[in-house]
Every structure is written in C-alpha cells, then in structure tokens.
Image (cartoon, rainbow, N blue to C red; front, side, top):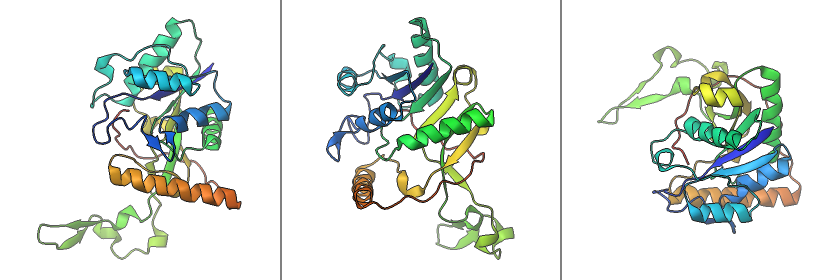
Length: 252
C-alpha cells in the first residue's frame, strides 16, 4: 500500500491559518490534496493535523483524516520525520499494510502530480530510502561572498575566486515540496537528505511561503504559470538524479 501524508498543523504564526487560507481562489491545502489524488499513486491520501477546522476542510476536499495529531507533535520545533512516523503507526494500528509513504507539505501550490510520479520511479530504481525534488542554485555557491560590518567583501572559497562559473560543479537545494520514503525508512531513519536521491525540477516551480511577501510572489508565479499552460507553453525537460545537501524546514 502507498499512502500520501499531508502534515498541516493549525498553529502557523507568520501567516496565520496559512494552511487553509485562500490562495488564488482555493484553500492552500487544496493544492497538495488535488495533486495527490490526480497522481493516482495512492491508496489513501490523509491529512495529519491537530486542528478541527483543517480536519473538516481536508475531508471536504477528498482527503482522509483518520486520527488527530497529538499536541506534542504540532509545535514550532517538531521535525517532519516523527510526524510522518506517527501517521504511519496510527494507520497501521487501523490495519493498513503500508509499504511506501509520501510526505507532501501543505503549502505547495506549484506542486505537479507528474513530479510525484517521477520521484516514485526514481525511488524504486535507486534503492535509496527517500526521494524528493531538488532545484539548482541560480548562482555557483563556490563564488559566494562574505560581507563584514563595514561592507568589505571576501570570498567564502578563495580557491575559486578566479574559476570560471561554467567550470564549477552545480549545487542543489531541497525544493521543500514532498518526500517519498519506504515505511521502514520513515520509522527508523531521520536523515532524509543523506539517504535520498534528488529529482531535479525547475526553480520557477517552487517557492517557500513564510511571509506575506512570499505569499504575494507565489500567487503571481501561479497565475503566470496558469497563463502559460493555457497558452500551450511547454515545460523544460527534467534533468538527472543526484544526492544533495540538507535544508532545515519548520514542520507544517
């Protein structure tokens, strides 16, 4: 059995109620629920939440809410893996036989069902514990600069000050949209990034939404993408897979 788990707590502080706030005319949590259902990959699409309002909305949108998340797993400091492990444990207590679980964050309006399918294929071919989407940094990290209190700059990597950018190895970051993992990995291995394989997606299809400015920019991006889709503009081809470095995210 494959399940999708959307962790959506009720206590968002920087953007209050952001998991159910209207985004381009839909509740934010509608986007991952719709993508998961449209992918046709999952036997169950569930939402893990401590909030009754989120429970009711998620159910109306077609997700399942078979349990309430306990308060100790819904604060600002709870990492992702224990929340997903708890969800798996609760579902198995109900008799489900889970092989794979995909954590999908609730604030991912640019998520694409085709990426869920591609990442699953990648996971199954790689033999890794996890798979997830990644994006290439827009500028080489080897040419990063420090800036002191007086504004003077220095190179983080002096050995690459004169290296041509086209000769530097690309670096990547976690797109922060979703994570496929085996049931056993979620229950025993919290190191997603060092145990995973990355699926490259274009940077214009991902955005962190932590502030009102982020929200405004993300809505503009979504509207622009919808316009391109209606105009028949093709997306660029996907790249190849690789391992990547970690990025910390607040649990949703």
